[in-house]
Length: 114
Length: 111
Image (cartoon, rainbow over all chains, first blue to last red; front, top):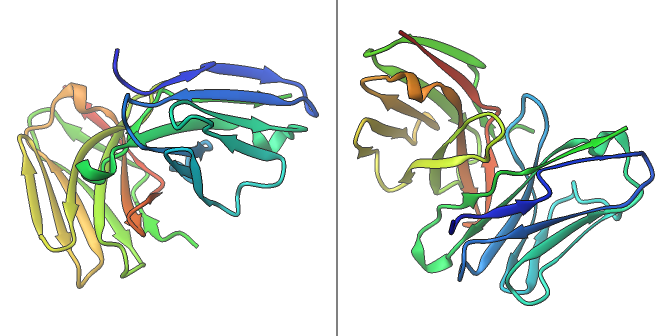
């Protein structure tokens, strides 16, 4: 399978706990994006990387959120001190800059904060 | 501020007929538009795209039309098939990097 993969697919946590999600992009894709989707809405941009550099962060990404892409391959998204409002689907996407604008999405990680 | 809007939350079409999904945008700086399809428990899947220098792009049963003066685009699916039942998202590029999505339209194809 050469698509974007995300782990875990589901995460249930208690309010105040920290969680970390992982995304493995399509091999050799140099851009990696994180989006968040809540019920009845389209995905909302959180942040993106080109190789290992984080180039843009949305205002939605509070100080409790941090993302890394240390070697320019996989990425992690950590949420500290989770709140019930963080419950959402977290989507990762990747693209190759020189091959058009299409972003290819993973299956997402569904986070439920109790 | 919703820069990309899909005003129809749902659409029901008979199998074999044409499905038309609509999308409006407000930001005149958008220069590339995409349609994604999403099944439950899966991530969005890219369908078709169009650059702002074109007014039509066709790929098999899928055609996207862009009307820049009206800031409107539409996705036509013909003929519609049961497997087309899904949520469809319109998205636009802002700065050629992040995608801005609409709220989605749930398409149901009835046999």
